[in-house]
Image (cartoon, rainbow, N blue to C red; front, side, top):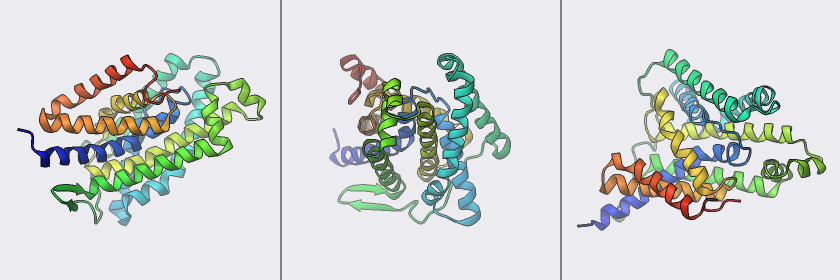
Length: 290
């Protein structure tokens, strides 16, 4: 018999989880969805963000979210540097499809190995006053360790959506993968635009990493669990659509939580990706694809 209490808690937990998924996927929605750069190392940068949050929180006691915001500009510069290498070595010569994918795969592997050599495979966690606290609303429990990432995810998604839709640079990012020549005629340099956009995509991983380690402990290989999920969210939402990405993240979070609650955790990934395949069979462009 279906328990209303259990169902309601599962829905709330799924929405909160979906918000976190959106925070992880938003950078890939820019890099892959709008720039056509298959950055398979994206979750690895999220883990780096988690470890930076862990280090600073352990030594200085700063809030993990604040740490993510403070180090985001550094991640932006790292992203700019990576794109310059990617462009010079692969994109300019037209080898980005396969060689570029191998480049990001190698980058992911290097990041994971370095983290293992330096910190080992032990799980790391952070401390904050709200971690472990729960708000009770009727018979629904809302853990703050999930609510805080959800609120931050909504804030980041809204800010990036407004930036992309209301500013010249934002609209140029949306246009760079669609009509490069038209963008040049408007006086914008496509390479510089893509460089800025990729830097922005990597900057979001600093915040996503701080949210990940709030939700639970991390170790270097945890990022692998999110590779399929974030690509599925971007494709399901529609390539290039930030709002579609957010909706897809909520759907994936809710479906995974419901399946894990009523069928078992091992079924969750299979059913979630089955939903992705079904959606793409009915609407190949995704929910809000261009």
